[in-house]
Image (cartoon, rainbow, N blue to C red; front, top):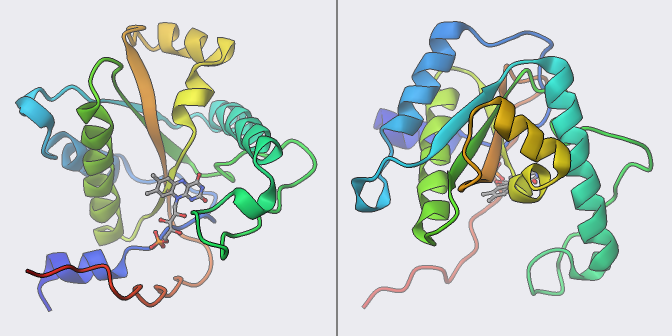
Length: 197
Ligand SMILES: Cc1cc2nc3c(=O)[nH]c(=O)nc-3n(C[C@H](O)[C@H](O)[C@H](O)COP(=O)(O)O)c2cc1C
């Protein structure tokens, strides 16, 4: 099979990782894959904030988990998925937990606040990075609520420390690491999503 297609089909969201950092040359390739993604207007505006500090990732991941808890509390379990009645019921740990689950590398993609296309820029860069990771044997998973996480006082402080202007906001996190456990199988694709005219 075509190599790119084979990687697209193989990539799955990985949420459990070995306690081992990914190699620097692998990280460099993943970043480059993000930098070479398409971007609206050719602006190349997304920023890639790489964090390989275990304690800091745990701290940021705990803030994100608290944000998830707030959302689940506001929206009862039966309303937490898509609009269908099959929406998954979310079971959250009662104590403090990092959403990153010990992932050794987390990249948060930031983009300017002022244009709706920037969220798409972040998403396509993220997918490039996850596909590159899969081709290297590295697991990855996108994690939502990056904006809410970095809007907190601690998040804003980190942005200042990292030299990221307040005109930017966090769009998405992606966690990376060597996968632990069996590679998950893809769910069958929902039918009726392709409209051909
Ligand atoms: C925008 C976006 C946000 C996501 N946020 C989360 C998240 O917060 N937590 C999580 O465990 N997975 C998250 N995921 C991963 C999805 O759950 C996953 O892609 C989906 O279940 C399909 O599985 P697959 O990626 O293995 O095909 C997110 C994916 C996307 C595209």
